[in-house]
Amino acid sequence: MSTIGFFDSGLGGLSVLEVALSQLPGHDYVYLADTANNPYGEKDGPWIKARGLLIAEHLSRAHGCEVIVVACNTATAEAIQDIRAHFPALRIIGIEPGVKPASLQTQTKRIGILATKATLESKKFNALLASMPADFEFFKIPGTGLVELIEEPTRNDQLIRAWLMSNLPPTRECAYDTLVLGCTHYPFIKDLIQSHLGPSIALIDTGQAVVNHLARHLHPQQQGFQTSPQQGSLQILCNIDPNLFLSKAQKLLQRTPLSNVEVQLLAL
Figure 1 (cartoon, helix red, strand yellow):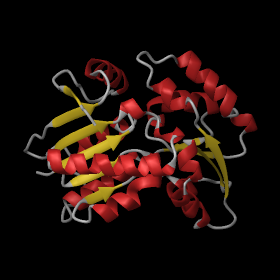
Figure 2: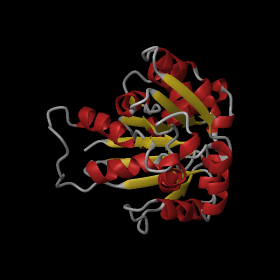
Figure 3: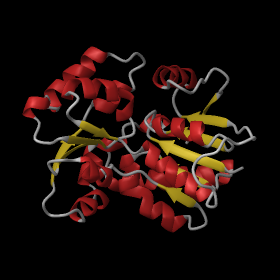
Figure 4: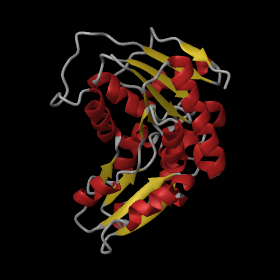
């Protein structure tokens, strides 16, 4: 049994944690939500790097995490190299927009990428795009304001649909046939995005790929996922009102009941 830390700027990383809890249940999980500083996508690189290092240190020293999942596309793009350099003894697993899976899905070689401004402008992300074959065309779509709508205490689908209408052209106007959901918050509104764009547009998110990577590290000799006889624990830390965070999380998670999970206030 390992202790695995997840961190994100808020609720988004819960979309990846939920997959891990379902498929790798025999471990202890600590989820840190830096919601007081949400969203990371509007902050500059040096701030995100410094914040990532502080959070990784806290998860390692205060909670004994042996593996840390940077469950945030923006933090992965801006901070993961520094986190790995400062904590060489830890296994650090990051998230990046699913450009490579999208390249296998597309029929037209035209791919849209919906992500935060910081992710789209990061050196790491643009190096990934530069590594792709020259005949692929990528359309960068900033998700400015979308995280805040998803994190509202009560999801207002009308406002989210209005945002999609203003920022994502419907199917008949799309220049791409595949859309990468480049932020861990976006899978929570995957149904609305798919409905807006239509069934001909393939949506790509990377939560499962991250958990596959985590499984290979935790169980290198094991093929596939197997039910564990051990029952792990879940601890949630956040730096806003814990009751408010729990209320939001319960509305977003479909498969993970949180009625017996205590959310602790974090002073960080």
